[in-house]
Image 1: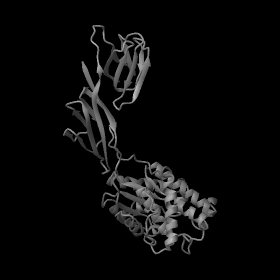
Image 2 (image 1 turned 120 degrees about the vertical axis):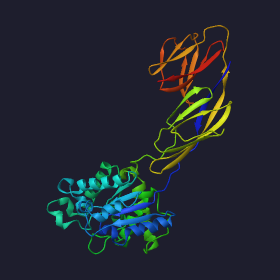
Image 3 (image 1 turned 90 degrees about the vertical axis):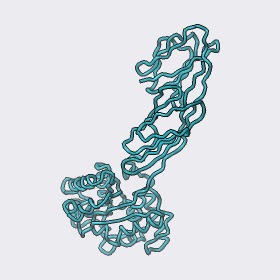
Image 4 (image 1 turned 60 degrees about the horizontal axis):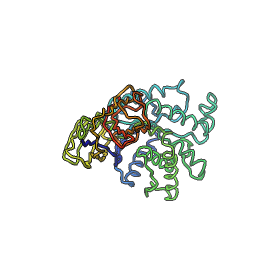
Length: 410
């Protein structure tokens, strides 16, 4: 008696969908030199078209934005891909215990995600003042120097991003690297606080690398700066953001993934592939079967090679497509000489073999063809550990007989 089984082999990878709309919520650190438009033009030079909108009253804080009608209306005006949140420059560095920063950030994130759960908040890490903050120096000595203030800003914005499953745009850390490696580049205007055109360009580069998670080095847009300086700033932005994206919480959401989460078989030529995602599904096979359900059951009429494709669009619009090959083929002739055939039965967390001849070899594979079991001289009645799922087993005896089948291990 000839029997057959399938072996799916994944052969394709992920594609992604660019994100395009950005709302900036902040103050003069955003509108100085028009950071949103600088980012827009930088992105355009790299082939990415984005839309930018902002709510940036001078001196605004998270607390004032959380009750500002213009800001709230801007949040509710569209399904934003990203909403940038910038705290007032001094408050962002002070301990949360004495400010409204954390509580107001909570309000803003709630407004953003109530409007669209797919919007990603991005905390705009600003920079320390050139010579520290005289106003808060006496009460908080770390604010007396640029280095101490920057360290506090980095810690606070990182903590907010971690708490709210958001991104950090590490402009302040890129600022630090420029100050340390190229002090001749002036990032501040005369007040030692607000950004110069070079500072704004650096911020735009950091935002591009953060939002798109791609380098901006190939851009030729320099925003009126010396092209060599602009190129240097693009390189520093990419290095800070992309050398360690996990430091800025850029891995907070997994990529859209159409890969199957499992499979089950009802017959030698029937297999159900499982995904279960809440988005939109499009399954198809090379013999013309199509499904739009979260899981799909395919029937393959004959032995041979068949392809299956699963295209998935998640609820936030991310897309992915995976194609794999299903091989249905013969595994050998089962002897029929009257002896009791071996039995392979599912047990708790494994399998139990009965009626197996002395000295027989047992091998087992999962639905992706991976070897799970390879035992010589199997002891009848002994439970052999095996992960849950479908197991294809093959028993070879010392006389050259072969027995095979499948079992579902729970």
